[in-house]
Image (cartoon, one colour):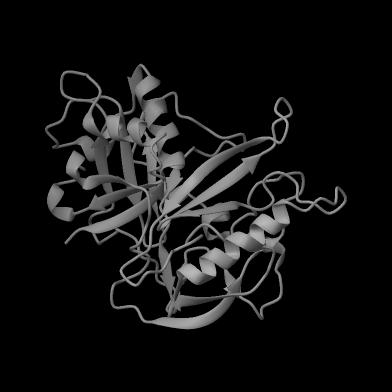
Length: 309
């Protein structure tokens, strides 16, 4: 039985480009016994805590703190503390080639590059132990919206939720009963009426004429509802352009119940009667999103998940 992992395209594409740009590639233990040509690839490594993708390019791509550049899947955590990862006993790594046997650019790499400007912000990767540690091209899907937030039998409960992305204003939603994001945030779905009100409220914030209290670029998102498509836009300060630049980050469509998964796994939704936490506040000296609400995504040691050498 396959397990679907969800990554952000903006996390995975740079890793794939790194692998493609390198002249040398690390030979990993996962390749043993696979009938594939050695070349650019992404390596999936999983545990009970998280699923990661990394580049096999040499030299290895490191961050300023010497940790590896990796893409972490966005998944749920339930009330028992278990995470929705693809890891199973005896199956915790697999190989995703980016080129064809003749060295030409493969289907997956073309999908990643083609999705960059097409509004496809999520990358779904299906992991199945029957695939013998080889992730084939039919297991990779670029999608504009993520509707599979939690297991299908999950109950949804009405609640008032808020977060700093909506100026800590309360909005009615349905939240997943017994599940949060892996960072500990509520997973919420909103009806069209609430989305329209949220859109209007944010527009009012952005058009504030008071120079002393108007938002800085990137402090709040822009929402645009056209037909049944909700576009989420993020503003970035640009000293060379008046007013900065605005980039679409998500194109959301309603699910079968007519609800939008706005900010699911990305915004720190909390109950509206909960006080604002430190993690909800903008990070000092930045206009981007606040850090995740728990240490799981940002601070969990990665040593146990180092790709096979």
